[in-house]
Length: 113
Ligand SMILES: [Zn+2]
Image (tube, rainbow, N blue to C red; front, side):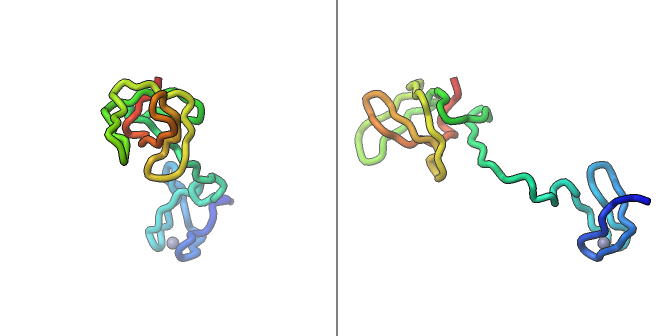
């Protein structure tokens, strides 16, 4: 006897496996059993402009000139930023840049070194 779960939609016991998916022949519902676990906590992943995953303590370079809000300063393309810290929000990188002090950057404008 198979140990497949009943259809979560119509409770039909006649579910079958189709690759990674489970399929219900009665209501045509398809679902991924593993996705229903709820065990996988969603972890925020911050990626740089190349799609590399960034983590706390990484060093990056800035890939375009970035104006510093509220000043006439510009963080030049190619500026190295050491020891970044990932934070929540629109600007998801917290860091210190020599000559600028504490800054927040967007991960889409940096490249992991
Ligand atoms: Zn069903």
